[in-house]
Length: 272
Image 1 (tube, rainbow, N blue to C red):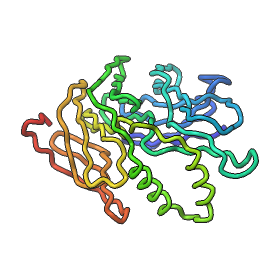
Image 2 (cartoon, rainbow, N blue to C red):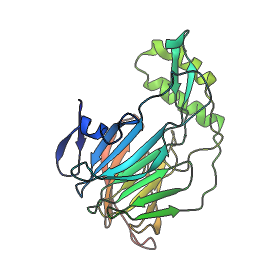
Image 3 (cartoon, rainbow, N blue to C red):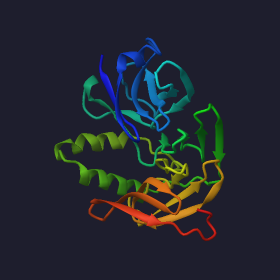
Image 4 (cartoon, rainbow, N blue to C red):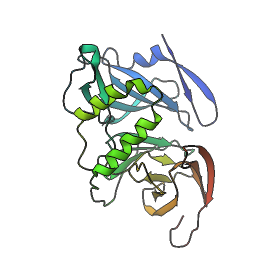
């Protein structure tokens, strides 16, 4: 009986994994979870059994997202979503040589929380939309217009070069290159990257990953799902928190060194 450790917004709590597994019996297992500010527990559960990996077309593992009551008894199922798009390829000879690769700009589901009322934002970036789940069981769909952005050969090569440079064990590179040669690249980028939510309930939707970005842009939605505007900041930047008139996140410089940065937000015309 493993113990699942989850970090909430104000305190560190532990959860008995066996108690979580009893919620789904033999069909699913809890991969991870997070305590939300309102005391409920957000959990991701995956199918317990799957066939042995074999080289084949891209696929997305299905995960169930749920919110549990503070005593982990009542389950509010949010839905079943696609995980990160990936593909099994033959990197080395034999059954043990089959490994999973994840192409660049690929589809995935992300989630964010931070508002004191326990609101959850969940988004599958295969489409320009996300969902807002309230602790009271409410659900709001947020959609916006966006055109698919094609993936260029130069962007794929930049992604590969980034991976080559960050690989600590260079002896693995030939096998990884063999995997890349079999990998199917999506024709278009996912519509956005990892979601973030400020403590004020604003939802920050970044553009799709760009491996040589000089700026980062975000659509900003109010807690009720209405669009407030767009914010653009220098360099690769991930939003971690936000409030009235400010945003906080992690900036990465040209050497890959990360820094904490906070920006003041101008309110003119954006309603931020």
